[in-house]
Length: 85
Image 1: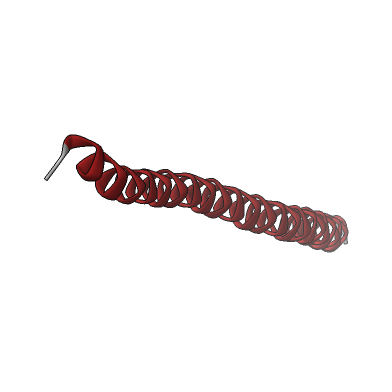
Image 2: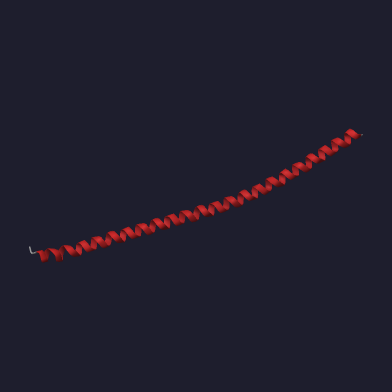
């Protein structure tokens, strides 16, 4: 077998394998980037939702604390009036 025959038979196979490998490598990188991007977007959306929930519950808690203070003041006022009588 001559070297020229060997090169003409093996070279296309090597080029095909190299092309397939680089194509696979690029697709894998793209897939990893998209996966990371999707994970970031999902976590960011979840974080935004949780922050909104936290703010809602914080405002409810503040409102309940204010209501408790008003009721405590009414009780103290009622006890003071009772003591005055």
